[in-house]
Picture (spheres, rainbow, N blue to C red):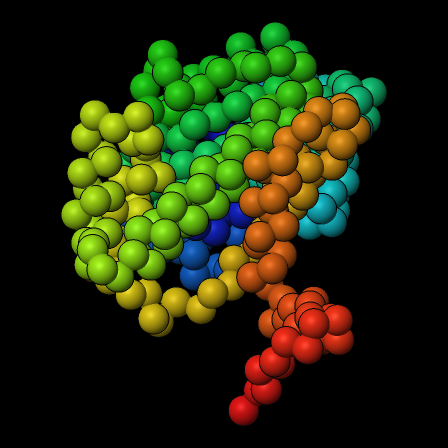
Length: 303
């Protein structure tokens, strides 16, 4: 089986490596020619000099997997790709696109006779060794065609991937997945900060997180990663207190509002990320000013 991978960044590149381990032939293209060359030498990926070149190296039905930033980059590449394809070909979007965009794109591609799959892809930099968790939305026909590729990328042929529903449902499922992830991360961060703050006990956070990894109800891969990080550095003084947010966390909160579903943990976790991003801290400056105005509380001056 042969397919093309467009976008060979950290995720796309490692997905190529895993596919090659599974004996899937991959034609790869990235704007960074050195990345293409490296993957060619390292994994036997077939190098392409352009998207057009990549498509020309495929046999029908042609499968093109996009691993590009969501929004305009994916939209523009998809629009440019369609004239090069024919009925029966398949496009997969494995990036973090908004599920509304995936539904729209899927409907438009169906009019052209081109199949579409939206793949919510989780696993990060560990996906190469552990396999990727793939939440895919597609028609039954497209999902059947893509099954060998999904099995090669997943932890095993019978687990770690699922055809969860129609076009759009894969990215919708990944969106909610990331919202839950925000809440879990925030919960661990708050709990560990409380443990660290109890100075009289002089708690060893590396010891405690390692302890929790075994038979505790909060054990998880996220805890595994946290325990490993704290093993090397508990103070984290070299880490800036800034946490970016992906679009999916915001989209999850919007979805909760649209459905009228209370999701206070997911929403607050997103808001806490916004707080970390406020370098000026203007809101907190206002709070201090108000406390001084109504209660005469001292205002701490900046140096």
